[in-house]
Length: 145
Image (cartoon, rainbow, N blue to C red):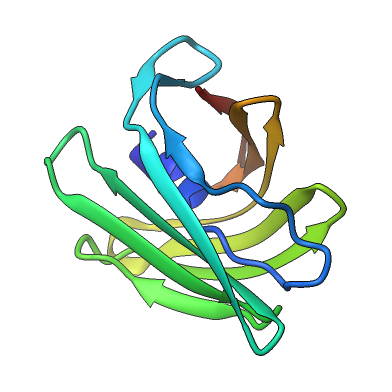
């Protein structure tokens, strides 16, 4: 579940058609009603490129998670402290942010792909996550107030 939440936090897109989603969001719950960490999102535009910044706290470890990704449509990779490698390609489509992801951890024998759709519905931030890990399909929806 932690990796689904991290995927939802990785937010960046191209500037021209990107939605405004800045704000402080708490009361986050997944589709099973489980409470998740809230987050603070800000965004900026520089030279026509939108960058989304998010800050949250990992509820398992207490670690402060900060993400900053440039919204230029280029695939970017990262490796976390547990050896998970993630490559994200991000774009906007109308009022939605679309994140296509690839994730792997060779030592754990894990690989998969996914897509996250992030959008505002009223004052709520909604993230729909779908994909597969090791051939097993998953889908979730996270709603933050």
